[in-house]
Length: 526
Image (cartoon, rainbow, N blue to C red; front, side, top):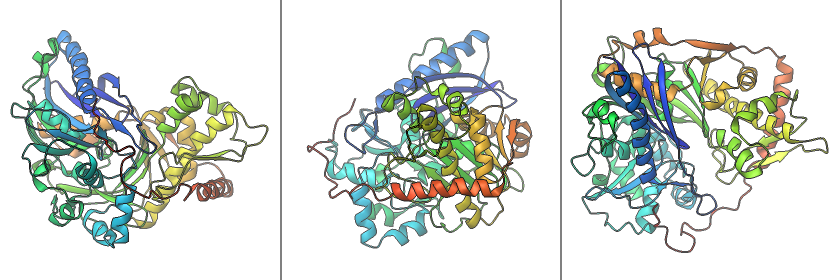
């Protein structure tokens, strides 16, 4: 059956990844996405640029597949999850810039709903926090202020996460494109009842979201449609008419790609933010303090004998991780390339007392403080570029420990090891620090493209390329493992300094007094 292609529509860029029958990544194409920051705390993408980058990366890997005479069995999709795309299904035009998961403009909406006493119901139904991170309040905002050019009653008005936008275009767009999503993405919108895996009438009413504007929810593993591609040159002959056979949100896809198929297995993805997921079994757990509960996946009829179709995950998220490295490059100008971070951080034995809390868009798990702001503390005359860069790397490890500590206290299953992926997982220093702080072995797989690998292997499982989860687990390969070695006293002393710095970063910004957009209109698309 040849290969599977995954579309990984991430926050900083789009990848098309080719995976072979050994579940190994054999080709990758990448396009960076433009980040728009129209006002403080706002983060946007262009939906048109997202789709153009999907086409460009598919054309690149598809062209090489065509040249090599190789075949493709299916396509899978994974994506940045909570980001909202609003579009007109009759014309295919976006109605607004995509509002990215990092965007904080809806803080006042969320705060008002919490003051009104809605948080217990939201937590019980969705497992989430009332936070701008999630999709629902972004829809509320656009309906109130977005000047969307379509009324809420219009049958053509569509609100979806990025997977829905990509799927709709991939399967024909205005010529019969499929408007659908899966439970892993839907569970991050704050509109899904995660017990029934259906859109909640109560939540839709709370946020003022018309049900008909939302995509159909289908199992993560299954046929979502058939590709109907534009002219991509030689790639079209290889990739057109294929089944789109799997959809997962990026963090759940990484959990799947890391073969964390058993309860208690944990993965961390160091991406734009850092995301920790622990497999929580087939029964939905109560949402513990400081963490969220997501649907990991719904395998439908493809779970295999003895496997429950639906799995849940405990989740913790920090908003800024790899994005802090971008800030060192683009904001401070103290590095020229992200690849410099590891060597510069390794050039000093420690941070010299410098602690960096990268709360550049607030703090996520387990603090959930949108008013937190980034701080650099402990500076002395001897502090320099290397110490600040080292503190940035240390911050990633500390922030993940915040989450693994909370998970360990809440999980019904003991956490025994951590599988790491994402761009920063290539740094040995980071994984050594993570092993010390989380006090458990940290493993790096041979391929750190776990997100795309998860989408590809899910689609391949649907199409029979692999017969079971056990077969996939047998194909996972480890490249390196790091064990905790420091005395516990040293680890705890360093962590205590981090916690003091976090305390100083919290509650820094004044609460947002109004949800009204600056200077009126927000309806600008590119």
